[in-house]
Structure formats: structure tokens, C-alpha cells
Image (cartoon, rainbow over all chains, first blue to last red; front, side, top):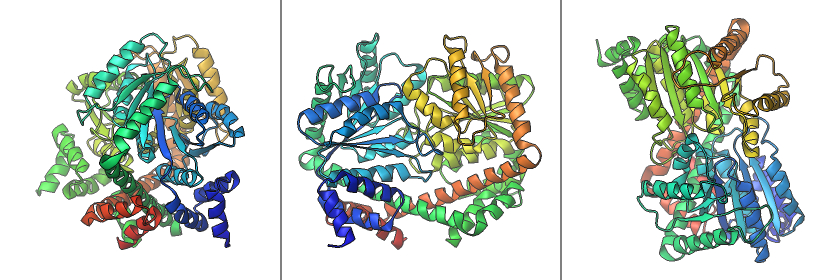
Amino acid sequence: MSDLEGLVAAVRAGEQRAGARLMRDLDDRQPRALEALRALHPFTGRAYVTGVTGNPGAGKSTVVDALIAHYRATGARVGVVCVDPTSPFTGGAILGDRIRMQRHALDPGVFIRSLATRGHLGGLSRSTFDVVAVLDAMGYDRILVETVGVGQDEVEVMRSAHTTVVVTVPGLGDDIQAIKAGILEIADVLCVNKSDREGADRTVRDLLHMLDLRPDGDRKGVEIVNTVATRGLAEGSGIAELAAAIERHRALAWDGEPGKARALKRAAAQVAELVRALLADRAAAALAAGGGLEAAALAVAERRQDPYTTAQAIVDAM
Amino acid sequence: MSDLEGLVAAVRAGEQRAGARLMRDLDDRQPRALEALRALHPFTGRAYVTGVTGNPGAGKSTVVDALIAHYRATGARVGVVCVDPTSPFTGGAILGDRIRMQRHALDPGVFIRSLATRGHLGGLSRSTFDVVAVLDAMGYDRILVETVGVGQDEVEVMRSAHTTVVVTVPGLGDDIQAIKAGILEIADVLCVNKSDREGADRTVRDLLHMLDLRPDGDRKGVEIVNTVATRGLAEGSGIAELAAAIERHRALAWDGEPGKARALKRAAAQVAELVRALLADRAAAALAAGGGLEAAALAVAERRQDPYTTAQAIVDAM
């Protein structure tokens, strides 16, 4: 058995060390890792991927933690991808919440992987697809993809999910309402967390109103679930209801003919993402090569040449 | 005088209708608009660009509004770019705050332009550079670039700024602290807004501590300013102090030799951004052409072909 076959077999057998090594090697763009990912593709497509995004402070990681406990109680194996696009320099802040979630790491039925920005465009969304594929091939039944913030990066990342849960809380300010309007557009299930707080009814009313404003003019199938998620608690507090709403969306969206159309759309999103990423790699290589960028930047800074002509010349030379 | 020369002359004369039309045509990627941008390049580089970013709910747009009033009181002309990367589908939410800021639109010395995601990678950062260049050529002395959220998109957008102000408020939760850690790394000036709130002292202490953790291990020149910004109020409430801190950063960072090095870095960032954007355009064109993506997606969805090989084939065919 070749080295590559050995790695593929180990990943398929669900060996956590093999999976973690493959993910690390994928981060470093090792050709061998990419080969492994290709070889694993036929063995993916079994896991159900749920994305969890929403306002900072809404308690997303607590909701994810409670969902892990819920799915574990049903016997499912759970993979988790925590995506943090906010730290361009350090390779990701070390988050208290994430560390606390690591207690699940003692459970062999749970695998948690954090992803942070590495500075290349399209990188996070591609990496999320990659990690989801590895977890899928490893045999995790449920994959939860959680994002830290809420923005365009997160919208891209959520393309890898079958069902997207948007978490919010009562009593956020105006600015946050605006953000919600953007992220709402990708919600399949809405979760009003900390719903024992004052103003929860109003938040639900606001959400219903905002759903009416969705461009597709269609809020059919988008359920609103109230939760009071408590770290590690599988039941009560709305988590079972949230899981049930996810199942209903799954049946509605992914079964039968509509499911086929969606699967096609998801595959197209992944291929498009990879194409963009490959081109971004080429751009990075072209910019790093031969000090051309420094000379070009000097001409631009001194107003001898405009940046648009300069950039076009670099692309043409590629 | 050719049509192009006429447009360039009108923009240089600061005619708002000409500037707005050029920005709109740039959004649509009209070749003529790009030509005008090239022709305007020699006449840019005069404006001072201040970026304002930070946590949702921190009152960024109120701070921007007060800074507009402050700069207007000094006689400067002010251009404003409001960047909202959160709405991928509608072309940008209509934000209450932004609308309220429009009262400055009655002032001919103020020009406000909103930018929203158009779905292409690198698009927002490029568009921000473009709009800043047009405002610069129009003769606006001060340009304020404000973002809605806080994430990787915003970090990219802030590359167009000479001084980046990060706005925060006392009493935010854990999640938000984590985000602050990411965005803090690009702060030149920190603004603790709503500093009459309980916990302001602690926020300043936390920020000082987080500055100590910056990778460059250097908080020299990063000032913390307390504000209680009130819409439309130029003075009092710390806004003059904030403006003074921006001036001190300007003198420290952009005068003399360090300023030359920074100008070079900023030009390099813009060229790199444009290269990425040009390649993203090519990717979009390649993906849109000939229905190749649909067929590829079907092969991937049916597990007949893996997405990595598929994407590589599309790029190779370009």
C-alpha cells in the first residue's frame, strides 16, 4: 500500500491523527494532501452540514456546543469547523469560547477544527469546503460549521452548509439590525437565543417582518426557534426544537428533485470557489516574483504610472 | 475637448454630478470610466484618508458624522465612503444611520458614497480605492472611509486609509473582545465611544493590555481617545481630541522617510488588489462561459469527478 493509499485508508477509518495531519497539510498546500483530497472525494457526500452564523455576542458557540451534545446523545459522530476570518496577522485569535468547547475534544466521537484567515482571498471558504470533505470522509455524520463574525466572508463560508442557522439575541442596537438584514438572506432557520431576555417577542416580530422583505419574497420553510442555550446541555431550552427545525429544513430542501438541484448548486459553488482560489494563488505568485511589485508600486506612488495600467501589465505578463 | 477630457475636467473641477456618474460607471466596469480613472491618477494623492471601523453598535457612523462636522468647521471639503460588505444579494441594505447622515448631502462641501458587495472577490477593496481616487481628484481634502462591520473585508478596505480609527464601546461581551483582537492589529488610533457609559475605564485598560499583545509589540503612536459622539456636533465630547490624535498619527507616520515607505506600501497594496480583482474578473468570465460550470458541477455532485481536478481544468482552459 502506497503512502497515499495509507493516508486515505486511515482517514476513511476515521483516525483522528490522520485527519488532523491531512487538514494541516492542506493548509500548507502540500500537493500530496491535495491528491489525498481528490482520492477521498468518492467517499464524501454522506455527512449533513449545518452552518451556524449570526451576530457577535449572540451565543453562537454555546448553541453549537449544545447541538454537539444533542447529536452525541443520538449516537451521531460530530465534526465541528470553527471559522474566524477576523485575524489577518496572527492566524486567528485564541478564543475563550473555543477553548471551552475543547472539552468535547476528549470525546472520540467529536472532532473540532479551527480555521483562521491566512491572508489569501477565497482562502477561508475553500478551506472550509476542504475540512468538511475530510470530516465527511472520516465518517462524521453531522458537521457543524460555526463562524465568529458576520459579513461577506461568513456568507461565503456558509455555502458549504446544507442548512444555515442564523443566531441572534433580543435587544441589539440599530447597527446590528442592519447586519442582520444582510445575513438574514442566507438563513434557513432562525434561532433567537437568550430568549428569556426582555424583548424576545419583539425580536421575533422584527425577524418575521424582515423575512417578509427578503428579495425572494418567500419565507416558506424558514422557521424561528427560541433557545436559551446552555453550554453542554443537550435538551430543554429549545435545542431539541432547533435540531427538529434543521431536520424539517433538510427534508424540505434536500429530499427529492429540489435536493438534486441544490446539490448541483452547492457543487457549482465549490468549483467556482476553487477556481477563484487557484487564480488568487497565481496572483500571489505573480506579485511575489522578481520584485516587480516594488518597482511598480514606486511608479504608482510617484504618480509616474497609474495603478490600473500597472496591474493590467502584471496580469498580462502572467 | 473629447468626451473623456470633458469628464476628467468636470471631475477635477469637483462637479458632484460628474463624480457620481463616474463612480456609477466604475461600478459597472465601463471601459471609459476606467480610462477616466487612469487619466485622473496624476491629480490624486492630495487628500488625507481616514478609515473608521470597529464593532457593530459602537456608533461608528455617529463618530463619522461628528468628524464631518469637525472638518467642515475648519473649512475642509469632506468625502465619505460608506462600505457595507454584509449584503451579498440586495446590493446593500438601506441603513437608517446612513440615511440620517445624508443631511450632509445638502452641504456642497460634503460628498457621500455608499458601497456594497457586488459578489466578486476583492471587489469592495478595489471599489474603495477607486472611489477614494475620484474623491481625491475632485478636490476633497478629507476622505472618511467607514465600514459597517468588522472582519477580513474591512481589514482589506482599510488598506486605502492613511490613518485607521477603530471605534469601540464599553461593556461588550466576550465574543466581541475576540473580534477586537483581530481588528486592533490595524488600529492607528483607538476611539472609546460612549465613554460616559459605565465600564469605560476598564475598556481603556483592556485596550492597553491588548495593544501590548500586538505582534509588533509596539503601541508607540497608538493613542486612545474617549468620545461621546453626538450626531452633527463638531466640538466637545472628544471629537476635537480624536481629530488631533489623527493629525499626530499623520505627522508620525506620513511625514519624511517613514511616510515614503508607507506610501510605497499603500501603492503596492492597491496594485496587488487590482491584480487580484482582474484575475477574479477572469475567473467570473470563465465560469459564466458556455455552461461549463453546470456540467462540471453535475460530475462533482454525482461524485464522478472531484472538484479540485475540475477547477484546475477550468483554470487551465482559460
